[in-house]
Length: 135
Image (cartoon, rainbow, N blue to C red; front, side):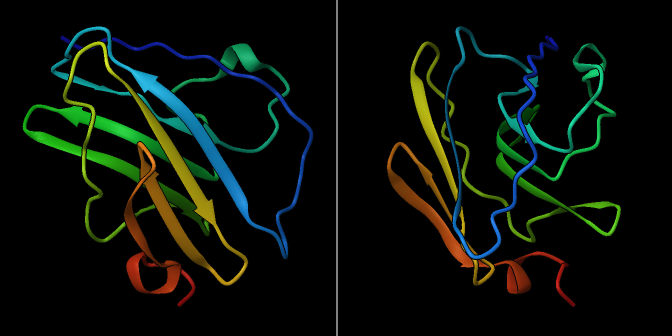
């Protein structure tokens, strides 16, 4: 059972140079799905938001994803034209139907990352060590 939904919103360009970037949102699955995700994508400004979809380029993608037995929380960064996944999966916590979960990503100026799910730290580390970037 796969379903695809999307919502998009435009916002002004910004830079987090020298500052923390915090991406936080809440996700709730009304019913379990065999294959699907509840992630957010942050990317370049689009001239036509109705064109938003799977091939839309993004700078980061963050949130729960499940397909069959593969369950994880994605944290993907675009780097030099490629989407780069974390070397090890982040835990998947979206098991309970009808339960909301709070996802928070903090990207720090020193290229470290912190991920929390329901205010519990599930990862803290370095972009350089845990992704194939900054080489």
